[in-house]
View 1 (cartoon, helix red, strand yellow):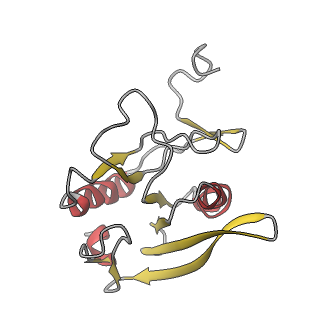
View 2 (spheres, rainbow, N blue to C red):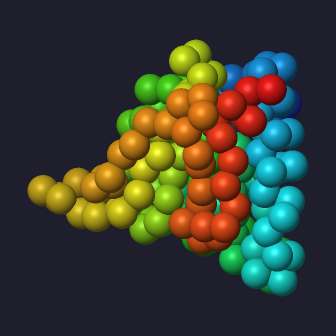
Length: 168
């Protein structure tokens, strides 16, 4: 449908067989994406590839997470990456989708770590340890980080920064 132009000029994602219209990007959202890009820029370019608002191919779904840390270097030119070390969604109006269908999709795709930057209450929900429990995919661990709490991606634990650094 996309190739036929059905969604020209619209921001959409394919999540678990559903076409989801994406919200416009507001300034707070863009500012957090800029902060993430700056903070993660220290990751070694030969091991990691940073992607912002770019499509992944996960189990037949085509989500566009706000931020992704993918295995690098950029070996996926021409194909969408099919996995990531860390996915991050910056969320206010999409919080229900990010906590629901996207979280389940990312867990089912065995993404080791998933963060939701919650713009409304200036916190980060950190999900890890994906598993299949009672026929549902989920994350076994969830931790809410605020203000001075330190964030550190599992794929590069020496990178540490306070949650507040995302909102400055």
